[in-house]
Amino acid sequence: MCSRMIKPLIQLILCLGLASGSLYAEEKTLDFDQLTPEQKQQLAPFKEKWPQLSSEQRQKVLTGLERWNSMDSSQKQIVKKRFERWRKLPQQEKRQLRRMYEKYRELSPQRQERLKRTFKKFRSLPPERRNELRERFLRKHPNKKLPPRTHNRNK
Image 1 (cartoon, rainbow, N blue to C red):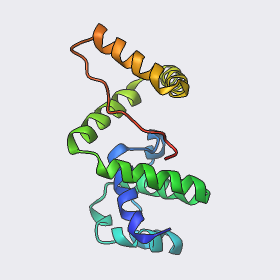
Image 2 (cartoon, rainbow, N blue to C red):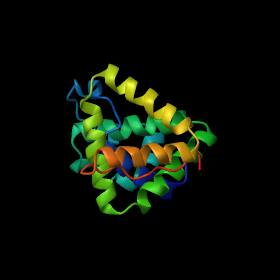
Image 3 (cartoon, rainbow, N blue to C red):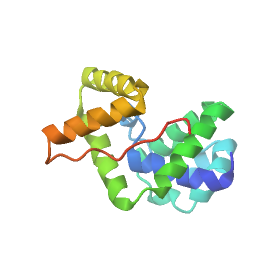
């Protein structure tokens, strides 16, 4: 992977907490020297920062790296494009998205799945219909804010 993409991707992983909580049951500290040669090479930009990371953060980084390494090139392209979009977002929108993500993580697995299905259905609608629904929502809930609009995920 392009080394200039590793550090920002790992930072995104740390920000969003993409790894599952079950991985932290074991509070084992993994020193940088204990990583595999491949992990050391890919995480070289983090060598100096590694000692300051908590066990949980280290595990998140390693889980994210494992996920990255398991992706094919088209999946990696999608992730890179999403990450570039993320980097360009204003800080206020990033904060709002992080809060929404935390709320999502607090939902039961059933509610998360229902939300995913609803969102997928919404995304499959024509843009005009999505705009109608957004406008109707804002009329019904004038004090609510909609999350920042996302673009086609594959772009």
